[in-house]
Amino acid sequence: MKPRAPIMFDRLDLLEWQLCHRMAGLSIHRPWLAALRLASKLGDWPAWVVLIALQPLLHGALGWVYLLQYSVTALIAIGVYRLLKTRLCRERPFITFDGSIVCTEPARDRYSFPSGHTMHAVMFCLLTASHSPWLLVLLLPLSLLIAISRVGLGLHYLSDVAAGALIGTAFAWASLQLAG
Image 1 (tube, helix red, strand yellow):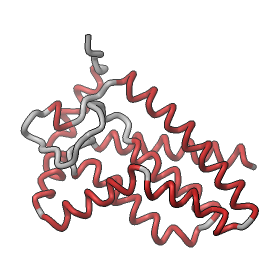
Image 2 (image 1 turned 90 degrees about the vertical axis):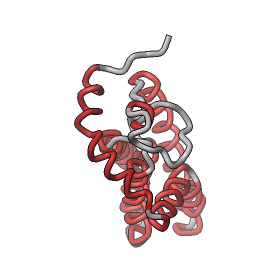
Image 3 (image 1 turned 60 degrees about the vertical axis):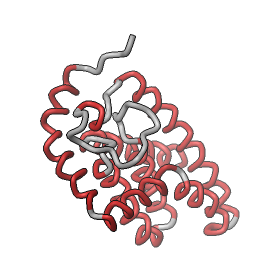
């Protein structure tokens, strides 16, 4: 038996449908669609693995501490994210509004809440702001494009992205506090 999403998601879905539909509709423009797809792919894992791996090169001996901090933070965040996603069971917009929102990128699963891509983008931006703020010139635009791509590709609602950003903020803050 399929788990049922909470009633609040039904109401949010209807409120967000029009905006999601419009944002996903912009994907008919090939250059924009290509940019969204690229951002989505980079935000899946490659950008963050490269960022983690670069820490020793960027910071010398202290970089190994950052590499460990970023890795542990990401692993814990993934665990919590998966737990939330499989318990809350909010279906993706292209599933809920079958045919009226076109998904232009394959989804890994059927649930959308929260956005893991956005969670990681925000989390790594905040960690990087603390250790290598000069990298934000690259990471902030990429992270913003990753967040937009999730809605623009028909994979997430805006509230999924907002929740992912809040969760990413919480994990980065906790990580920085624990690292002292």
